[in-house]
Amino acid sequence: MPLPRLHPFRPRSLALLAGGYTRERLLADVGAGLTVGIVALPLALAFAIASGLRPEQGLATAIVAGFLISLLGGSSVQIGGPAGAFIVVVYGILQRHGLANLLLATMGAGLLLLAMGALRLGVLVRYIPVAIVTGFTNGIAVLIALAQLKDFLGLRIAHMPADFFGQLGALRAHLGSLEPAAPLLATACIAVVLLWPKNIAQGRPLTGIRRWLALLPGTVVALAGATAATALLQLPLDTIGSRFGSIPRSLPPLAWPELSWGSAQQLVIPAVTLALLGAIESLLCARVADKLTPDLPRHDPNQELMAQGVANLAAPLFGGLPATGTIARTVTNIRAGAGSPVAGLVHALTLLVILLAAAPLAVHVPLAALAGILLVVAWNMGEWHEFARLRRFNLTYRTLLLSTFALTVVADLTVAVEVGLIGACVFFVWRMSQLFTLRRVEDQPLPDGAVAYELYGALFFGAVGKLEPLPEQLPAGTRAVVFEMHRLIVMDTSGVEALRELHRALARRGVALILANVNAQPLSLLQRSGLAEELGEAGILPSLAELKSPA
Image 1 (cartoon, rainbow, N blue to C red):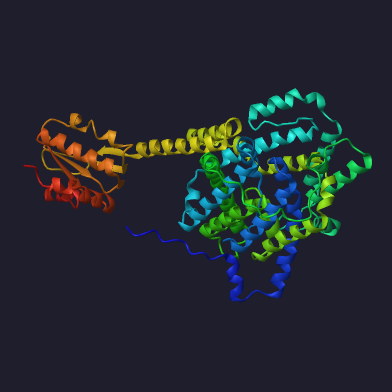
Image 2 (tube, one colour; image 1 turned 135 degrees about the horizontal axis):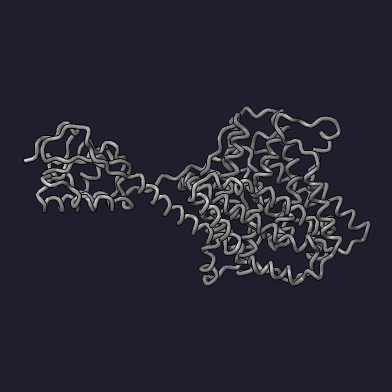
């Protein structure tokens, strides 16, 4: 059997070498890159801290992975880096397996993503039902919000559990340590982020002073204001410095994570979870970018997965966390005027310059401010309107969405997706089996002793049971059963075996089985399985009109 043809490694950035990249395009990309780099700064810090890691690890991820995703990716404008969707998964892996194994799981996910792209499996991600994606996305948003309540309320909790009920218990047990300044400051940050002018609405550009204010991201304004207020008012709040110490003005040193066979065996499921989540998030983000940039080439899903794989192999070497495409930063990049991967490269370089020049200033940022920003991220991440629309959809959709959501919150993302996919398959089989029907033909003249049925839909393992009672239901004197199969679009081997068993059961009663007007796929399977030979030339007819009186 020939080996599968691998997808060629052709990054979208190579198109720049073909010419046509103008000075005006370069200036627009540089401006967009600077803008999105500033937007990414507080998010990189917040995502790392919320995941249980040090803030510089978030910056390293945004710089290394963000640069590689833009350089090697299959999208013109997608921005990669640490994402809110990973927070809950990364925190859980860190608590159960430790930092070294988290880095190994991330590299394992990188290998899986690289293989998925090379084997052209990017399109398969689109086959995951929307109900499952919506369910686990909303579940992750709830868990992100729950994890921020500790710093939002200023609670003194030394160790936050990774599970939902454990976190609820810890919050309830430590409510007595609430610091009133923390929720006030965090709420003020939320208000700034939500109300600060944003020049991202198409067709409604801002004017006057609001246009100039929109050049500075609301998250940066909120962080700067909260940091200044904490210092001037000497608020008794935890800061990045008080919890993590100083932030070095350089990338973490290049180091290979410690590897042991015993730990690697435990990391298969975490690596698969990270790879699946990264693939879904990045390709959903790329599709959003395609809709917003109709004049640019559509993304290449397989190349995008390969770029994500390389990025997740490289980032852990600098202590980084998993990375994927990020919708909020990508949309900001597009709205700021980006039109090529150069904007993403500039975004990563902007973060690198900030790290080298101003990293020590981050130690004064209060954690309550980051909690407020992440609560906004969690709110924007969830598709809450889908809950209100559930009554419009059928039971299958509601069951898949709600079960995936509930399992993501109270159990685990991996369990939620597994159960969701199994449920989706079961519901699909049930629906397809309901579509298969066997209808008696009574509006066409037939020879004496012949009974005809029209087959509709797909004859597969979930529908073969509808053929089994047929011999008992035939009228007396029947000498031939004819299946008109023009509307039978597909058949599997279980369908063939069901026809073979029916043929033998009818033969024992002296009744012939005849198939008429068989489509190409079922006919090919009948021939390859040998059933066509068993039926003989008289057993397969080009149409019902060719039927002769049974002997």
